[in-house]
Length: 128
Image (cartoon, rainbow, N blue to C red; front, side, top):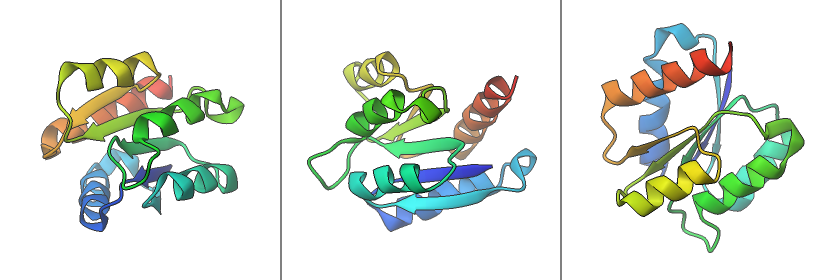
């Protein structure tokens, strides 16, 4: 399984990789990292991504929500699981994420067990 992790913070990307790596049922897996919206969109075009872990806040004018909207426009990724991650926890961010095609949402700081449960559930559901 190939995961695209989009976050402008290297420590956050490393934490997410560690949390995904701890989910034993996902082996084997591969990570592609993107620190910006631009690199995320390039990675989507150049690779076969099976799951996207996407931060809402990026250090560019393009947000994670904008990337989510672009992903849902791409035929090959229209149904891919996209998991939004954000320090923005108000209801509007959650609603906007889900309304625009995110499969789930988790707030930072990330609780490892909740994260693992949600990611595992999404993968099981997506592979049915």
